[in-house]
Length: 166
Length: 106
Image (tube, rainbow over all chains, first blue to last red; front, side, top):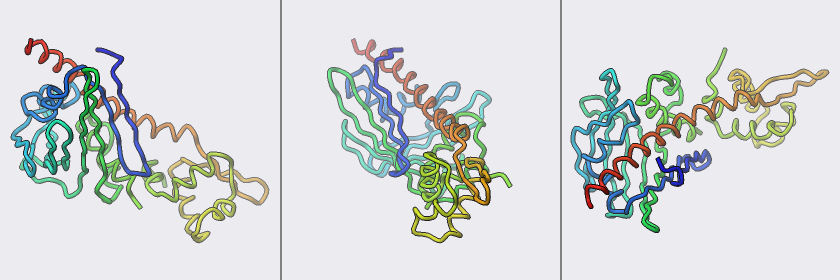
């Protein structure tokens, strides 16, 4: 893969955010589609060997996406996202929460803010993840760290909780 | 009792203590002078930091000096790096998807 594309990953403890910036060698409308259309999202939105499997998705303000990260042994980690704001081809925001297979979300989650901009045929995507919850940090420890990527994603949420603990 | 390092860094005062003693080993009194809080509160934070093994104690004469365990701090970096990798993997996958979509368009 092209290595000249920008990739930046920073954790800002003071602001309780994780900021991820990545450039893609494609025009904005295509990249926007890749982040907002179910059939494209399912092609990339889980780190191999996991696969993303969207059960349903309605990309409108107030709409939801319910999807699983499916592991090689068939294990599923469900995630429920709710779109809270959409400015077409510029920005969208969602609330991300882990859920059970029956779509019951956990109480706490995080706010994700996606920004898209195009320059010289390349599209830059910035994802800012804000923590919302002050849930007990001990939960993170209970969950354990190293049971695959789905779990690791879960840990990201927990890390954010950790960083916002007062 | 052993504690998780992430519990140790969960508190802003403890993070401030870590920053302080990263520069030099300090006594509890010297550390406490930097905070508008009781000596007891600082002692409690130091105990948690010590139990998480992020901080070590050394006795010099009658004083205890606290200093940072740099190697332990690196565990946090390693852990964060896992998240970075996850995103990296996904984005590399997206690169391939985008390149396929671009070809289809032509």
